Image (cartoon, rainbow, N blue to C red; front, side):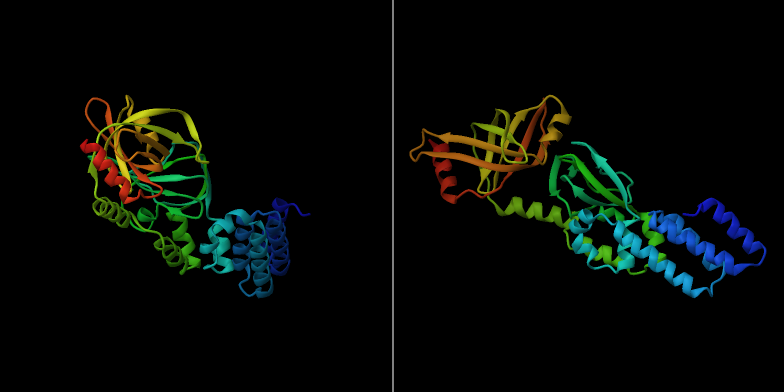
Length: 336
């Protein structure tokens, strides 16, 4: 094993003395060693120096490039590659390696913002583990646009344009992810001009913010809501769908076959935000109705809207739609 620092000094001395052949031999040996030690940045720098010293040393230039790419391919995280296989399968081996080694790692705890609406953030995020929620804030409150799991990108709306963040990205669980900085993509484009379009095509296979907002408005219009009142039992659920702690009571304000809204008092705004994107179970027994019926529905909190005096309106989307006959029974009960 050669000493890289000493070999670099010797190679530069050979160059200064005009012994180009000896310098190329040393540079090649250093490149091979750095590549095998996974010191890819150094290997690339040495190869650039080789190109400067003797652009016609084609055998060493080509073989060193092949060795670097082969060692990079062996160093790829197989779990990450499998999670993002649909993206990486569109890339050449060189593009695949270049993208992977341009990504940076990050980890976040529960309920931590990755970026916030109105921020300047030009990163594209690749979630490997955990769950994220995409929130849109307006004057009325907060709306859950979607939850993101492994294999789904985040931040593409501002990554491929020059705008502030139009949404907020917050962790639902502990999260491990990689991210690509826009400055890194600009450098990659110099060598791989097709890479940006391939990334963009992959991201376009997922709905953007405008499409998600449009869908939410259509969803709310398409399912007719019925005003009701009553105190129902609500339980937060963990990832396995099991109840967490004791149930709490919420005052139901309206319902449709696809979801409902209820009001609760929350003294801290941060506590209210924690609920957004959480899975819950809702129970109620209409024991006094002509046709007895029990509601037992799981759903996701998709909207939180503040009222005066620490009250919040919580909007829930059911995992499974109610049968229309259930709504008819609830309507009958509410008229009694």
